[in-house]
Length: 602
Image (tube, rainbow, N blue to C red; front, side):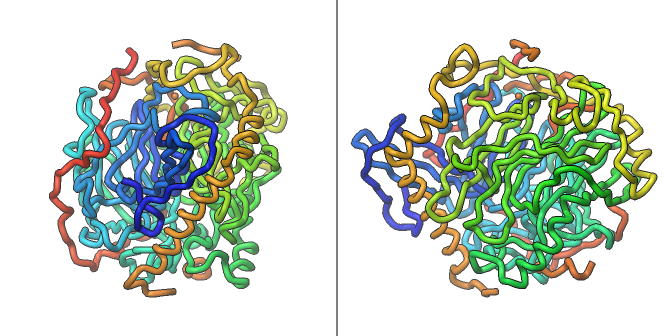
């Protein structure tokens, strides 16, 4: 069933197009994304589909029933990004209450994950859906089948977070499977820590960090909420990245802004809000915050080099040099958060630790408009990063050229294809080693910043991380999902295909999808009850700132792999709201048949 953005009958747009006939996923926006073993899971956010018909018409579908499902992609699937219909490689799992308004979903939430389970936390919720009938301390967890058979709503569990509320959004989440820990830093909340039903009820910046101790049984996870120290400024739309150092690793908090236009009832910040953000937010890149997990201590550290501008809605992953002499955090995309029409950057930066040196690694062609915001990134292999979803611009140019882009961490370039049978170990890019010394294998000679802000940080980064980190690659290759030339790239230049596609109506399509997204965004804000205000291997208030397939034993390696507390006072905000059980409906939607988990390679 296809709906228009305003909830009426489906919208059919007749015009010529180039490409496959069928239903295409063209926009994944503000979703919660993470990897569990050999799959990437996608929940919530806003998904836009195009139904391309044989008569040349296109139906634009931003289906509200997407809230009924968690989508997933097997990392054994190969694809050619510029030409792939990603709908063909996405499966779905019905949530409890699928096909009805009792299914729970959120915009700008986070997916905590270890190697066995994920938990859906936070985000902006639908006031007319299940969220309005669910306790503030309830969270939905999913445990993928260990035998590789069923993917069904029966694998969902409602977990209780105790004194922690889920009423928060736009924070920085990080999951650390090797420590069985997850953290969610700062973000935006309602003044009373109550429900945040739309874009305009999260007025205050949170000075809290949520910590979750993840056990293999979802209901056994232990949740706590601790105050951030005064020297760690609160923010929204930052990224938190774990790096393997010392006893338990460190969380590095990068970027973000003091306020973002998506949290106010306008398309742009006010002059005063813009001035404040432009004054403070750039410092979130030039000074990063580091949390020593084992010592429960926060630090700030100044950076040097070619730092990114102030950014919101970007993504980040890390990769460690083979000898662990450097840990390199890759930052891609994002925008300034001031106006929803402001374009995102098509730039990748590396923050190399422990030198704390910024290096600009990649800059795209500005004429191609390939930058993204509100996307997610995962690292399936040591040398690959998948950029999932996002949008280019608001208004009439929101579509992206491919729902997924593939970035080579070694070369610092985007590539057309993802093939699970072709990958390399991580190598430090030459642009990075030129700044920190050493070579592609490591041997960095700059192993400290110009000046440590605290000598304890020096000891933190000098101490190796010795615990094993599970890796689930290489993945069994399913070559039937894509075609490519022998050199691993498409036979036709991607830029030429994009240009020709534009001549045949791509811009019109993007305008339709963009308009639908914009209308739904305004609709959310104004619903009734709104209160206003190489070596290749064959075989992955804004107030607050001024105040302060089958079950397989994984391989292990120390200090690298897929990585999907605080000195302060524990607090219990936001739990004065009535508790109501999650809906008990177990009716699966007939619209999407769950796909089986494929057997992983031995």
